[in-house]
Length: 314
Image (cartoon, rainbow, N blue to C red; front, top):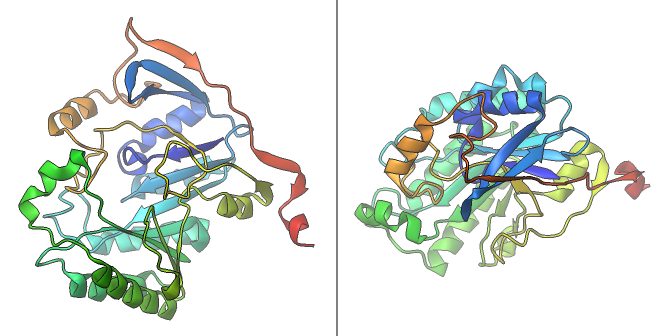
């Protein structure tokens, strides 16, 4: 089983104490976002959890406790964009986050810290020239601290349309996407990185940009030193390359409040849910109620323990 922590919220930034408490207790609970009274109990034994994939804009709260992950395989998706507070109102200053990125990379290795420059959106201020300029600034500063950058172009979800209305967004076309891709690829090569896309239909391989897998069985195999083979996640979009995982987050709980975010779609719910967070609860927020039905999900390791990863290349 692969744990995704989380596409729905920023656990490292806001809920790291809760997460480490759950590792110590050996389990957590997750509400089904489509049926909140359906609750899954997830066992977190290192014998079952093949890898933990963290998604974050600020992993700093985890750094002093990173040794508590020693029994697990894990890696980070670290989103570091060039937007200001008008787009990412509660994200810390970028100079500070660059230092955090480097510190994390020194602790766990450059392959296990993946830089995300996404989503890319266009306005009269954040135009293609702006992105090309600041992508290179960030790439130069992160050079030697990551191997890969993941990019995506903004999708317009119904959940985010209201937040985006006041931005006067410039729509993408193939010419703009290709110009950005060409320049990003050139910059990435200059600073020793590869670029992959996240859930993009457009073909950019002519710029050495491949479609990626954010939940990546090949990377997990390298980290663990043994082969894992999993099917594509059927719960993700057709163009998503991710393999199957179990997400342990909750929507409407991220306090970054980025206006492009699809995981927050009701500000009042964010305020209410975060007030209900309890670091000692098995749930990310709130408590179990009389109407809740809890079922323990039965998972097992998907590693092939008979074949080491190195054996595959002898």
